[in-house]
Image (cartoon, rainbow, N blue to C red; front, top):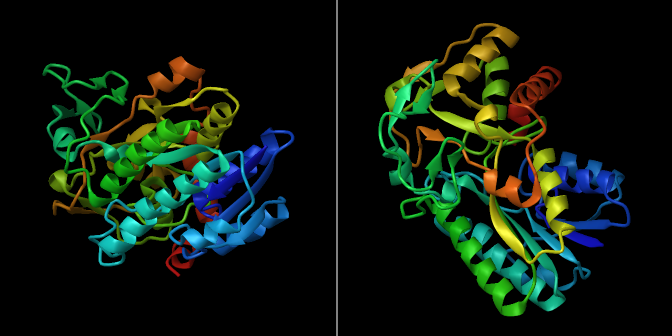
Length: 353
């Protein structure tokens, strides 16, 4: 089996490549990456050592895909990952659209021509911000929780947000590019008869993740706390009660492996750490204070575009279809990142280029 991974030198792509090579016999992996993000070069060296064939190219350019070998499967792990992309002054709206939508279109054309299956890594941020903001909530143990005394909308249960939850705008420019990519991929797969899996991922977190708070809040927060950088509780009263769940990329890779070997035409799943792997920023700070030493964030109630108070994905559909469930606990994820912070005290500076 030959597998093409786009964005192979990124956090998700590099973990996928290493996991699949360790777990599967008779596979070969090649990948494409434009190496534009700080930190990518480190993963490039490691992947080459593992036997991954690397192509320096950009999926926004159709011609960069024309000379790639044929693959049996494509894993689309290339994206502009920040929910603030297009509004943060670092990435233009056109750059965002070209990265996350045009790049997907070019990969879909590759799949059509080579009859390869596609696994599209999507995001929890395809769900409606207005609907998420309107969820009834209360505070418990320094974290927002859903208020069971009030009615919940469709697509919300004890496990969190299900795939049927509202995806109406606004969902952020970033979320809109990913939702549009999902729809286009579904049309291509139906028209040209290749298998398609769409995985709406929660917050990926683990050692070696590079980026900012908008791309990986757990990793960023631990590194910034250890480095004694200024941290802020933004929005929602400035108390840090907002909650997200964490998913280790090896658990994502395990599901990708299941999907490629299932023999099915595909499906669409939420993949996340769920309730067991969820935590508020205030709770994360308390963990860091105990692991390192006290360092309290600034309470800043300023609103920021696209922030939501509570977002935990329900992965029950994935478990029912494949028996997949995350194996790496939140405690393991946090400890792994903490060890990385201690051994790489300059990590944030390196990632900022």
